[in-house]
Image (cartoon, rainbow, N blue to C red; front, side, top):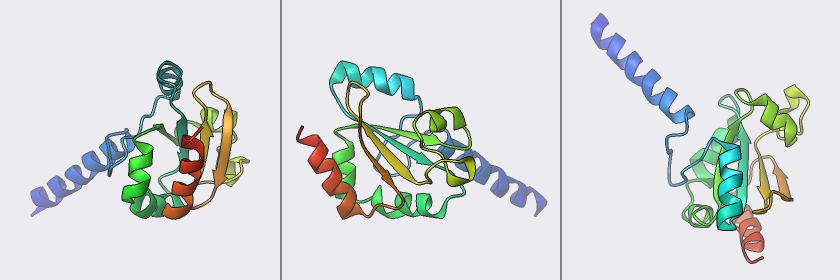
Length: 144
C-alpha cells in the first residue's frame, strides 16, 4: 500500500514538474526562453505573445482551462510565438516588462503582452481574457 501511494505521488510530481518546465499543455506550445523567442520573431517576422502567470493564480488556471484550449485561440496562437513567463520563477523578466503580480508591485496577473517582431509593445491585456475577446485582439494585430 505504501509503495502504491509513493508511486502515485511520484508520478504526480513528475507530471506537475514537466508541465511547469514548458512541456506542452493543451494545443498551445509555450516557449519559456524569451530572448530566444525575440530572436526567432526577428528572423520570422512574427509577433511574440507573452503570458505572465503563476501556478497559484486562479484566473491564470482558468485561462489555461478555457481560453487557451479554445480552438479559435489555439489557431491564432499558431501564427505567433507564444512565451509563458512564471512571475515567481522569473521576477526579473516580469519586472522588465511590467508583467508582475500585484504582490510584487506589478499590474497583476494574468496578463498578456503582445510584442511586434521588432520587440515593440503593441497591446498589454491585464486579467482573465475570454476566448472571444482574445481572438478579437489577435485578429486585429495579425492583420498588420
